[in-house]
Image 1: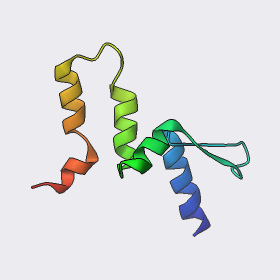
Image 2: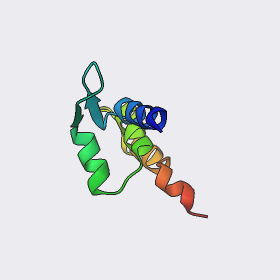
Image 3: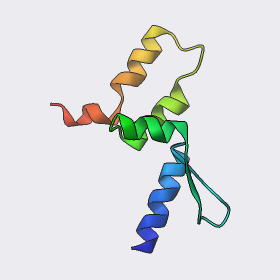
Length: 76
């Protein structure tokens, strides 16, 4: 169980949702994590947005990234 918790925390850290201290005992919620929690989004969606969207993204790129969100995988 502790391995599962550690892996989950590392996944959330890679998705820029939380920050862990060096020994992994303290967890800080980052802005992206608060947004994901508030809107019930998948952390992989947050990671996708963080990695793909920047200030030079045009409307076509934004629509492409938005349509790649994990939440749309549940729709037929």
